[in-house]
Length: 422
Image 1 (cartoon, rainbow, N blue to C red):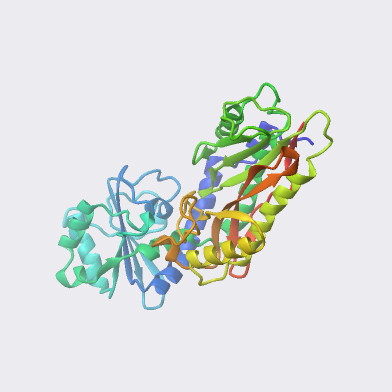
Image 2: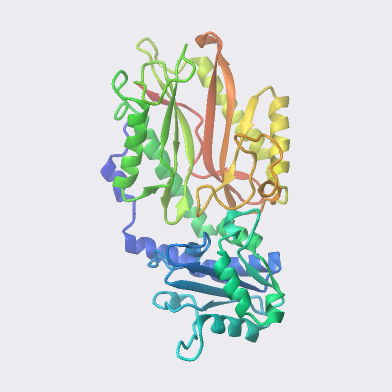
């Protein structure tokens, strides 16, 4: 099977200016359509998002135009839910270039300080609730530093300061919700990630007896860089081998090995997270042995069980509990540790199991499932291979997926057959 060349992969990446045009169009739509919905759902009339240059709130970059790569000095954005359920977007910072496409200003620096202007903006709109990004549960809702919190609340009129509350669920809801255009693009972004993995897990990259797992991992990271994108974590490639508990990634790959990769990239502001498996054929093998194929089928079986447990309104803990019980009932030795994904790799939304905590997750596990949100469906099954003298192997799979309100859809598809290396 031929795989796309590095040049072919690079040609699929849009020029930076075109990327910026797309993400700015998405931002405009989201401010007009997504933000009012989430503010109404969470009962917040006004949301204030503050960030200082190089000390950014994790939410603020999702609210800035593409040309702004950091906050500028002190960036202070306000979002007011009007009585007609539209949102007024207000820039209360000194930097206007680029922001004026999305935000209205009005700060006369010769007449009042930034804090005085912010207090006046709030006073004139008379919100019943004012949301700030402070949270014990979600990092995404806890981006406001203590200094800025103290200065802002001191500047607000006393009656407005009393209306301040945590905007943690608003911050999470804003970050996790995907639009139709974003989802259409997300399909292709994940297909790109899959094509990189397919090339990595081929004879074009893996030379049995010469190449190590670490070599393949660095090849993946280099290719992602060379086509103009970035990894959000360093890729890994692990080896499983008959008669060896767990070879070091620096071990040279041999025929008969099972390979596993974990790869995540960013493109158009969206992250992918993918784990797939490969098998290296022995000289006397024409295909993947039947029991190894059955092991992958068990992994797909767990994915099906897990996807069936997704119901809007259920918490991450409820989804996890139902799926893990069903997996055990069907004879699978399973683990589930799925996380939301979107702007961030380990994204905003409900935690559904943890690798080191296969039980109730306090806080983030109690957050409910909403429609049009995305997840890195991450899990594994342990399987004993008769052809390996009943040695246990782990089939670990991960795929960026959409919950559309009714079902789970694997963006770019899921792995149902091994990559085969000859």
